[in-house]
Image (cartoon, rainbow, N blue to C red; front, side, top):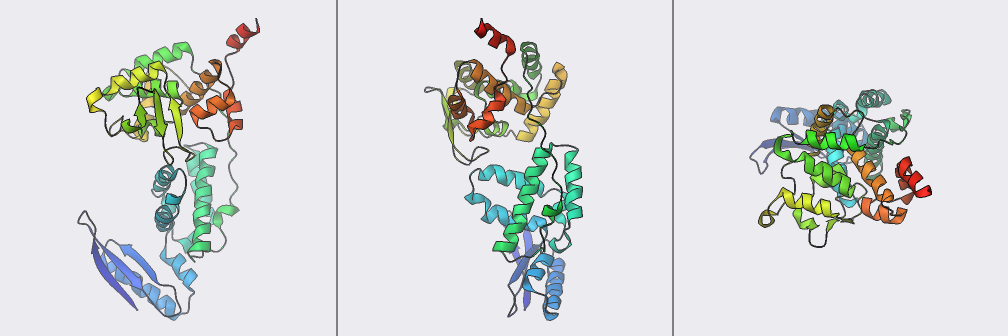
Length: 336
């Protein structure tokens, strides 16, 4: 037997929850923006139950990939390290047309089309991470939630090759031009973020989400907690004297609460950085390259792999081997 119930959330928005229960079948429920959509869904599910269609298939007919992402973010993601980073990534995936496809209609062809579109704007490594997420969500739905999608369509798609690691360094001339161009950025925040990235090796998301309560200027440290980093592991970041000066310049001492960069988003920083590099005449340079530059400078200052890893937060120290492409002229000076 099915029924529809109106529900109002905290913002005052009304939605309609459709529920269907029948002996021998797993209970079904889904929210809709209109009552008519909810009633139609109830009628369709009841008709399918009368035909003896299995619960697993009924669930696949009832849900879209976006519905699965919602449940995954609520039930699975919170128990992972790096939960906030994954949640943001999955919410972005929900905006793709792929997420609106009903599970019983989802095929490898849809996954290939998504892959091809994404490869036009992001690297193969990013696409592979997204496909891994989709695949795990579908496997979780089948194994844990009793929602059958048949064979996992992601596993029938050839993965793109990961691009070779970038080895883009920032020259002295480019750094001067970059700092100068940052002065033209609205709000004046970009110069501070760029300098902190170079001084600390912190990721863009870590800088954007940084809170003053994690900053100890007296001890010259930043404490990033579990869940606030890409790999989910907390770490202490030492601050150079220049990094302390930059942080002190952002907000007066008595007003340092909440986020260091108020109301700023990673997307806004990304767009501003691209425009700033264009004004500075710097080509083929991304914000993440600042992290590579910062890490390389750590080695040039004499830090060993273990010390550098404690600063940058690399979980596997072997990953740092690609960051040790040091300035050949500086190495030549050491050789004598």
